[in-house]
Each structure stands twice: as C-alpha cells, then as structure tokens.
Image (cartoon, rainbow, N blue to C red):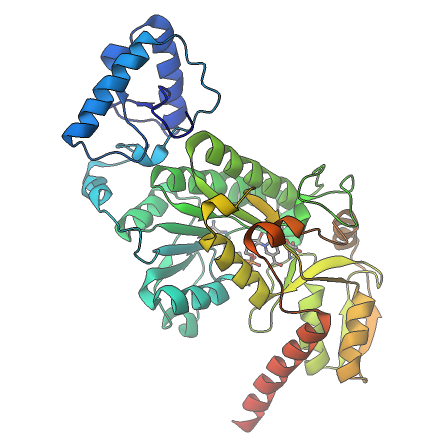
Length: 425
Ligand SMILES: NC(=O)C1=CN([C@@H]2O[C@H](COP(=O)(O)OP(=O)(O)OC[C@H]3O[C@@H](n4cnc5c(N)ncnc54)[C@H](O)[C@@H]3O)[C@@H](O)[C@H]2O)C=CC1
Ligand SMILES: CC(=O)[C@H](N)C(=O)O
C-alpha cells in the first residue's frame, strides 16, 4: 500500500492549521473509529489533484472501501502532502499559483537559502551553468555584494518568516530547495538561542513548505552530527549520534525530521553529511574546521599562521568543488538508487600539522604557531577523524577528485593568481 490508495490518504476541505497533515490524520483516525469518515472525509489519491472524472470515480471507490474497512492497519502510511489543496497558512490570493503545472523534463527551479555563506554562491554558479541562470535563485538575509547581485537572481529571505518563504516558493514556481541557512559549530555555541531558532525552527518552516509544495529538498548535515560516543575512525553512516554542540544537535534533528517526512509524507528529502569544506574565494562562517581555510590566506598574506587547534587534531575535509558536485549528483540521483536519505561523503582527512607540512612544500618560509581555542578544540575532539562514505560511493557513484596535495596546489594557485592580479592593477 506504499503508494496505493491507502485510506490514510484523507484530506479535509476545510482551512488547515500549520501541521495540517498531522491534524488531518488525527481527525481521520478519530472519524474512522467513529465510523463517520465516509461522509466527511475527502480521499485524495497520491499525485492526483486535478479533479477529472476518472479521479473522482477513484475517490468515490476508495471512500467506499475506507468506510468499510476497520481502523487502519496499514504498515506504511505515506501521506502525499503534495496533494494538499489548502496549505497551512494559505491566503486566498495565493490560490491560483498552485495550479501551475510542470513538465517532469523541465529544468528544476531552485531556491538556495543562506546563499551568501561559504558554499551558496559557488553552488548557484554550478547549478546556473547546468539549469540556466534564471532557474536558480540565491537568497539570504544579508546584502549581496555587486558581483553576486549582478550574476543572477537574488532575493531576500529570512527562513524564520514562514509566509515570506512560502510566497517566494509559490511566486517563483520553485521545485528544488537547497537549504543552506545555518549557524555553524563555533558561532552556534556563542549564541545558542539564535542557533536553535535558525537551525531548528527555521528547518521546520523549510520542511513544511517543501512538503506542502512537493519540492525536492536538500539539507546538508555535517561531521558535527556525531559526538564523543560515536566511532571516530572511521565513522559509518549509521551509528550512535550524541553530539555535544547545538549545531550538531540541530543537524541530527534535521536528518531525523527529513527522513521522517520522507517516510511519513513522501517528501523527497536528500541529505549529505559534509566534512569541513575548504574554499579559496569564499570565507567560512564560524566553524571548527575554519583553520584549514585560514592557513592559506595567512600563508600568502603574512607568511605566518596561528592555528586554533592542536597540531594532531585529525578531521575529515573536502575541497569545495567536490562538495558542490556531490550536492548536484545526489540531487540528480534517481530515487531508486538512494537506499538511504542521509549519506556521509568524504575526500581526505588530515591534521593541522600535516596540512602545514603540505603547504610548506610550496612555501617553506611559512611559520605555524599554535594557540589553542578551548571551545573549538573540545568540539573537534568529539568529531569523526575519518568518515566512512562507502554507501555514497556504492549507491550513487560518489567519487572525490581532490586529495590533500591537489587541494593545497589548487588553493595556493588560486590565491596567488588573485594577489598577482591585484598587484598588476
Ligand atoms: N562550510 C562547511 O565546512 C560546512 C557546511 N555545512 C553546512 O552547509 C550549509 C552552508 O554552510 P556555509 O555556507 O558554510 O554556512 P555559512 O555560515 O557560511 O552561511 C550561512 C548563511 O546562512 C544565513 N542565515 C543566517 N540566518 C538566516 C536566516 N534567519 N534566514 C536566512 N538565512 C540565514 C547567513 O546570513 C549566512 O549567509 C550549512 O547548513 C552548514 O551547516 C556542513 C558541513 C560543513
Ligand atoms: C564541519 C562543519 O560543519 C563546519 N565547517 C564547522 O566546523 O562547524
């Protein structure tokens, strides 16, 4: 009965509360118990909302079956939120947008939240190349620099503002949502209430909107979703997850909620646990792995780097190009190839000392000193040292391109060429 006409597919043609599906389900259960479902419920089969005659006949037939059947004993209840005609906080003026239909072969219409951080601009560039400039909208609560503003659509969006978010999704006919907004590990510990609001309350808005509008949803998780009681070397996809940061707790919550919405409501939720990401043309947003970006900037600017983690702190890392390509690949992966909805991905694993030695192969004069930050060190000591990403490699062909040597060469070439260009002007 997974996608069949299970009688849990009941929806009410009355205004919805925010969690309309849960409410509809509870109401339905109550009515099935009371034997009143036949008269008052409207059954909507999956992927069906245009009320053509054959559909109406199906609805009538299922309504009859439902009224005859005992209290639901289905094993899997996939409630197709995408079939909901009334979304939780819908205002009447929105109604016409919901009838816009898409061909499956169209390019996706993508919205990236939190798009002005370390990863969003690069992802927008990659996706625009593939799907067309105007099909990818970057959003954030910050003001974009000119280079971003003039390179493609940008829109203000605060993920804590549910109505605004929904309006953007509806008015722009969004089909894929890439949810990048978050407070990272170190800044999260510095402001727990804000991290809780953005990373947890914000995620609830995203999940509801994605489910109501039938979006494919990507939410990144992190090595930070594991904790000191997880196996650390290597860390498999499925193991104990008891992180000790609000960032990690919020990411485990996101993984579980996304998967719950997938199995419960049919949401096309996809999630990768990223390692620390290293990029040359964007700055990290306040994480524990930031040192691995800063070392390159300082090496080139001053020839001296002060590292805030101990020299032997081993963490999984990845060059940004690999991270963004992995994101695109998992979003495009055919659903049957995904045996899981949350995958570890990895490329390399190193310590500050090993990274410094690799950089010094190119810049022997680089001086590295250690001034350990207790908060960041405690976080790093609780995170995986190595990530087991064999399931991603097996299921959808994940393969990294950059190892540590290539990463260092690429970063130094990029930053050096930028410096030479500035000097030339
Ligand atoms: N960069 C990394 O090393 C890793 C990143 N990730 C995840 O990838 C995603 C993107 O990461 P980064 O770009 O590095 O993060 P970042 O910290 O650089 O950027 C996050 C963005 O979210 C925005 N934001 C904050 N509050 C918001 C709100 N209320 N509404 C809308 N936007 C808001 C910020 O303005 C910022 O531009 C995050 O979810 C992060 O947890 C996961 C693992 C590693
Ligand atoms: C690994 C991450 O999630 C991020 N870079 C952080 O250090 O918080």
